[in-house]
Image 1 (cartoon, rainbow, N blue to C red):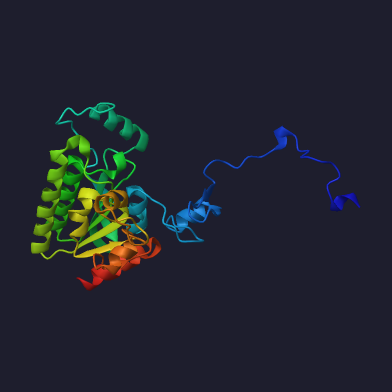
Image 2 (tube, rainbow, N blue to C red):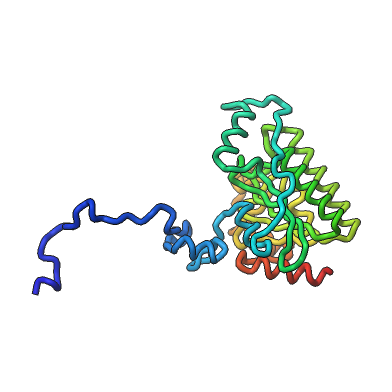
Length: 280
């Protein structure tokens, strides 16, 4: 009975009858390689339903996850980088910024907003890795400083979500100055007794780690995030030794006392609300 097996070899469907899946309909996890529906991946807070891999996401996704009903008011949204050093490498800094703005749809590597999170008023600054590697320049430092000022004025908690390759080389000393600037503002927050929570995501490195990312009243992280100052390759070449297994992962950093806890992104809003509720 031929209907139990293919009698003719090859695919017989005409080209015009074939149906292609639309781009972006499916998401393939880069770790376990399993596919899932994009909508399911989004509803799972952009984490893999099979292996719990946390996909890198930007400020808009975090704001939608954390703010009630995804509603918030953005601060200083049109703040843009200048070119104080007239820097040029393979292209001018001005051209690089313009190209990145067009590609990413962002004005710089950080956004600040305020709103309610589980009915708790909060200010959140979140970094975007898609803008020149989430590098910290003058605008990033200024947005963080203004976010802290907003938290001080309204006496509400401040959350910093870090995701960065470090200080922005095109601004040299101006970018390094942001380490001191943001740290000084955080000291004011501490003196006022206003909670500051620092969330380190993958990756958090360089001058960002060496300043505001590690100055939280609570330093927390997502699972398996890369956290460190210099990269593992640089450290290995410098000390001439093999590095421990899992070096610079969030779990390694937690074991060595530099984090308070690791939180799954799906539980992030509830855990933050619970933590801030206890600090009221």
